[in-house]
Every structure is written in C-alpha cells, then in structure tokens.
Length: 299
Image (cartoon, rainbow, N blue to C red):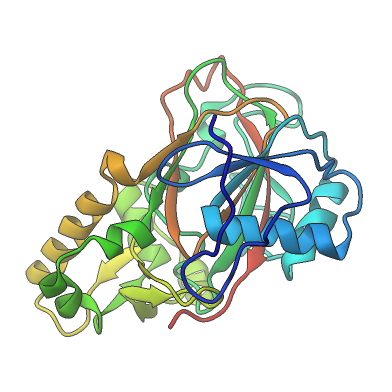
C-alpha cells in the first residue's frame, strides 16, 4: 500500500501537517488504513480530531485488528456526535438497539439467512429517508465470511465532480423524495405497515448535497429514491437511473474485503454503500457490530 502524502483537502476542512498515526491509502478512489490507535481505549482530543480529518480527506478509514465491546465501540463513536437510535425492527419485531449487529447468526448461534434484511444489499446512504440522515457509520468485524460479503462504497463526490457542466446545471437545483416505504418495495421486502409509514414519512432532500464540513458537493441518491418533484415520473426515474449507473462505475468504487477485527468508518455525506450477499449465508457467518452518528439536515 502507498504511504499518504499529507496536504489540504478540498473545501473548508484541512488535513494536519502530520497525523499522530501511520496512514496508508487503500485505493486510488477513496479510503485509508489508520495504523496504531487501539480504539478499545479512550482517545484524547488530538487523536479524535486527527481521525476525523483523515475521514474527511479519505471518506473511508479502516482500523485493523481491533477488539471492541459494544460499550467500547459506543464510546469511540460518541467522540463524533450523538449516537443514532434506530426506528427499524428486528425480524422478531423488537426494536434495534442503538448499538446493533448486521448478522445472520441467532443469539443461540444458528446461522439463519432470513435474519439478514435485504435493504443493506442495495446502494444507499444511511437514513436518507430521515429529515436528519446519518453522518458517520461504523462497522466492526466480529465474524466475517471466508470469501465474499464485502462492503462496497461509491464516491458520490467524485462522481459529481466529473459530470458535464450541462448535467450539473440540470441537476444542481433538483430535489429527490426519499422513502423507506418505496425502498421496501424496490428491494423486495415485506410492505411497510401503517405504523412504519407513520414513523418514516417520505423526506425531500437536494439531489446534490453540500458537505457540512468541507463545503464540497456530492450526488445524494440511493434505492430509497421515490421520485423527483417537478419532473414527469418517467423523466425523473430515467435521470436517477442514469446518475446511479454513472456513480457506481468501477472508477468511483472501493470494495472493502473484511477481516476479523476491522473497524470501518465512513462519511455518509460523500458516499453510497451496500453490502455484498455473494457468500453462503447458511454456512458462513457475517456479524458486523454497528454504530451510527446523527448528522445534519442536507442542503
């Protein structure tokens, strides 16, 4: 892997002259591995700020060989804002806890493929159907498949930057309605109940959002898309499909292959992501411990 040369990021957020850890790029598109910190231990303000600066610069940061309890992961995540509670429910009908697992393993240890919700396997930005979507998501690899089960990222900032001036002019002032109810249909899940519809009403956000920290612009799309207000349905659907196809091309992608102990942290304001289901869910465990930080209203 290549050693990172430090410098200013685009926009308002600047990288420090030097980080208090080793950092190496993991792809040319986005992502860096941070080497050194033990995230199971409290971190000081300088370390907290340096990790955040690296996240703003690289959009995805990876810490290898971590071993974190739920409480320790929650403490680390809390350095970056308020932990997000989940309105969703587990397959048994219970609410997701604030610190929860993406898992195909029951509490009794059995591997059950139907435990896995379909939604995370489609391109999305976390909680885009909320008025206040997620800012930062963290996943900690507790158990991972021998092959497959990657988490795939699309750099929506870079995808926007290379659009033609005409396309930018066409989309810069458009809005998109994000709907959890519509997403359930799109991904083939059971339809939303009336209670779920009340808890998750559709939300309208900019098609191109401005990063609250860096001031950079990025496409803001995903399979929570319902429609583009002001455009005929067919035209809006075709436009979003074109932009989604553009943004998920290989030149905008980084696919993270999991190792046990990985802590992967990403910036939802700049990316879409999805999980890969190309592993045997009945034989291979995939248990990722999740924490999410509340963001700000997109603009």
